[in-house]
Image (cartoon, rainbow, N blue to C red; front, side, top):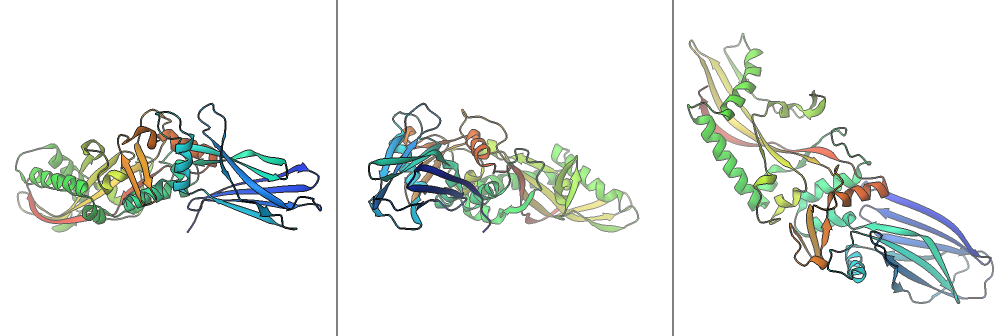
Amino acid sequence: MESLQMNQCLTLWFHQDLRISIVMILQFETNRITLNFFPELEIKQKQYIIKAYAKNPDINSDKKLIYTSDSFKIKPKKNAYFLDVDYWYYTRVAKYLNNSSDSLPIRIDFYFSICIGDEENEIPNPYRVHFIKYIPELLEIAGYKQAKKAHSMWFRLPAEDNADIAEPVINLIDFTVLLHNSSNFKYIYQKHLEKIITLISTANRNDVKKSLANQLQKFIDINTQEIAYSFGNTDYKFTDSNDLLVPVFDTFYFYEAQLQKQLVNGIDDEMDGLLFSDCYLRVIALGKIIKKKTHLGIRVERLGFYLKDQFGFSEYNDEVSLSYCEVIDKEKVVFSREPIINNESFKITSASYQNYRKDHELGGDFNWYSNIHFEEVSIDLIL
């Protein structure tokens, strides 16, 4: 799997007997901090211990001792020490640091010292860990596997806050899987399906029929010599539309609804887990047109539904929460619109992602589309 990493290499001389080399690596789905040091000369001491400290960089506070290792024998060549900072370790440290009723720290600076004899050799540069690094993994634990895909993609892309620059991601989310897994999304989908069928079946004029007629005109204009022909387009290739790169089929939608505004009761299933930003349901139509003496016979045979969203965090806002996350234990994670217990929840904002992007120079905003989900219909359109 392609991964992203932050490398920080330091060579520090603490005294004449010891050369310290520390390599701190943060990979997208790897959480191990590795400390390596090499004794330069013959030293009198034979043992060492590691001390770990932590502090919240977003408030004015002193770092706290969080861990003291056992004593280890100094090897004549390479000495290595490992510390795994996974989401559960991070959560426990965050709770230890939090002395207020506020939400838990969204990023933590870890400091390390190598103690040999009476001397504590502090490594001055902290190892900063952002809680949002764990969001894809936590979404999967919470059951939001489709949502994990979108977040994982963001962490794999170079730093970019303009989603329109990047090439859109197609088929990121499986529409049919959402229908199967998300009770909320299935309910919303059924309501829109019924609404569309009703509006295009009626003889009365309405905005949806007018929009569909405008899309049909594109096919009528290029088939002036044909008696019977098909309309509709499902081409996934990219084309330029108003200086934006979009799949061809997206230039033929006649119906759009913003789903974010329709959700209630917070994150209760997989669809809600996706919606850290706006999300749109769009619909295309496919069918046949037959020229008759006095009019065109138009039959809609299939309706194609898909999702479009801009997955990004371009606005720096630390006040409005996108979601709250509570890590109850290693196996249970809850995402909610409001904190269950404020000082045991992480407040996730767009600023959380922007700070990660600034520190790591990783994290790219992008537009994405689901696949197209088709419904078979048979509607004779009266324009």
